[in-house]
Amino acid sequence: MSRQKIRSIAARVLTRPGSMLFARALDLGLKRHLPADVLERLIGRPVEIAVSDWGLRFRFVVRSEGFRSIATPAAVDVRFVAAARDFALLATGDEDADTLYFSRRVVVEGDTELALLIKNTLDAIEARRLRSVVRRADRLARRVRQIHDRRRPNLAIT
Image (tube, rainbow, N blue to C red):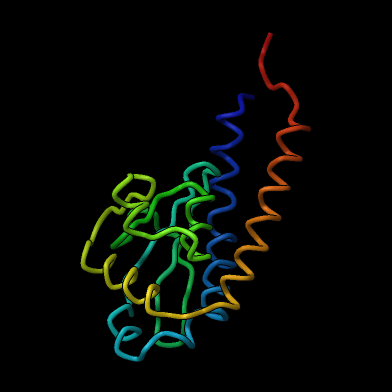
């Protein structure tokens, strides 16, 4: 089985549980920081975060009780696509969203007004502790990726 086929299968299998974990993390780390008017405007608006280099997609929607994962791939109002490292740079505040957007390292598809609401809200939230956690997770993910790349078996068919 080719590496691309394995990656495709893994991405499909991991989307739902990954989305559930991602939505729960947003509930715990972000919901309390969202102003009530912003939360109200986000309710019922499906969002997808696509991590291009890992082949992962996290789909969620905001409900009155918090963030919830969704399974339907075509039912998103806005999609953000970037490499894992670029998402980490955004989350830690080490890189500006506009810079990544205009350099095409972050691609936004769908409702631009919703995308701007999300971007401006995240820019306004001062979350040093969250950024610290993201930095640590990013370092750990890079180490895991390095170990994986060193130990990756040669999947080429001869």
